[in-house]
Length: 287
Length: 306
Image (cartoon, rainbow over all chains, first blue to last red; front, side, top):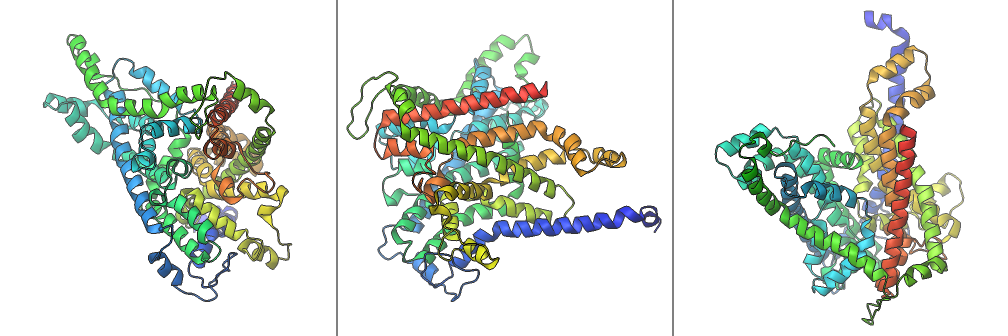
């Protein structure tokens, strides 16, 4: 009562401003998600039109999804692509976490001759656009006979320069006493890394893991170059092949496959929003 | 970067030489997998790619000899390359300000005390998680001139329908807006983090002193987020020069080549026409452009800071 009496003029405009702000933000946010909802609607639309799906299916049907599940004789099987994408993204994530965290541990706690130079080089290399190495990388994988294999799709995602810088920071911030105490108890470097350091940097690992998974799942240009048969295509490629082959006659099925391709990243986002937000914010503050 | 806690070996000077040697060996073992892959995925290709750019290698014919700077000389006079570079520059000039400005506005909106802020933030970030292929399919459908959703909306509010993607002047604009929708989550999140670090008392004090909204933005917000803002601009600059998917998959570089960008040209020369040496030269030229822009931007930032 007294507070209201003391600030009679500031309180209600504040609340009104907040309400207006909320409404503006909510309307914009809704508009932002609308295109994704259109695809969802389109996947349940019976009309075989190549153009827009309308805002609600005029004649709702599950036919498109049935067709997607039964790919009778199509050249592109979206489920094969889904399987490929899963294998590639999961393997890349696991390997990147192991390789990058070991490197970060070495840089933070076991400096070797030249490790300072290596760290500086890594930060510098983050400035080199990866596209400059597209052609030579293709030639190297070709020379090793690795083109059109899972190896070609996985290996380029294992080395994350940003990941090493991020994890090194996490490890450097751990109190030295923790690893020292374990050392006195007779733990060697591996045990220290495996049982002390790794559990303590879990938030960093989660952030890096999600970023690597998303990058591998969503990558388009490298799989486009590195694969040559539909059976090795990942989802983004399969979507495009599918669109060119069947887009005119079966647009609803293209919409359904698009939903299939974007659901895992959106699910991960909903489950681990904190780590993604942290990861992206960190990217901006690197170096 | 904050100060590193250095090797524990330094704390015991007597045992230092012996332990440091052992530490060095163990450290290299831990670093070995990463360093080996780094060599294979970065160092060798960078050197290799530069050498390839000095040859007339043709992947289809399996031929190629050293030609010195011939590829670079051809690029200087290649009208295709000029067009691709011009289109890329146009995209950069349009995309970076739009993306950063809208990102900053949304970040400032979300920095207010709003109801359901988490859900609203999630809505703006969600497109950032989608593959470019899905983004292309989504927007090709929505922008379809025959009854696409965007034209339906335009028709409903009495505006003329547009064939966005097949009109030379409009296609690049459409690509910029699609990119805004897809990528705005990045500047939004980074700038929001910077805004949240500004102490609220600063604004309170300015309000008491009678500063209006613009003055508060100009003299409190902008200086406080300036370093992060410059970094966001730099990262978006680098990213925009490497634009590919949303153009290649939505417009295929058309209409009339008006959206064909450098990376599309690199992809087509290298992997469609198999002019490997020429493609490598395009890659190096693009890298050079990006490095020069980065250097200029960093220099400008430093000069403004001092």
